[in-house]
Length: 183
Image (cartoon, rainbow, N blue to C red):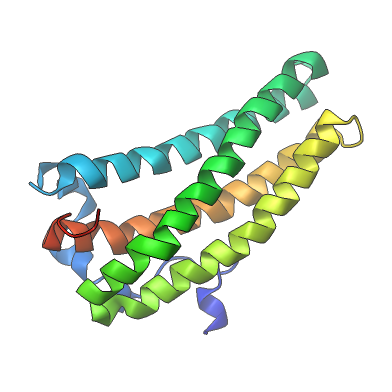
């Protein structure tokens, strides 16, 4: 696969994989009859991942600045960091094992995009492992909040790239074909 399509270096999906966005632009998604239900739920999950990353980054920044003590930071990292890792793993499993194959068959011209997203998931496994080790280091008093902050920022940048590309590819397919047969 082209190195420019690697999660760490890409700036977005190639135009050919974003072709359905012309017919289904983001600012019109909510008005589409196929938005309610699956698409809305799926985008809410993505929003949760964004919020968890933002919250963890804000907490780590507050700890670095001395506005949040370790006894306040640690339970938040344990709770919200654990939630982020568990929910992302589950979310990716469902996508890899069910949604990507089904959607790829519905829009075979976009199959390469689903391969890219699947590759992202494998890359994110390593990122989640690194994030977990950093979070555990903070909880065990072996890693400073500043190191964790850098870890969460790096992780968040790649997660945001992945989520945006995933939405650009998947949402238009579901809006075009409807959610029937995906459940």
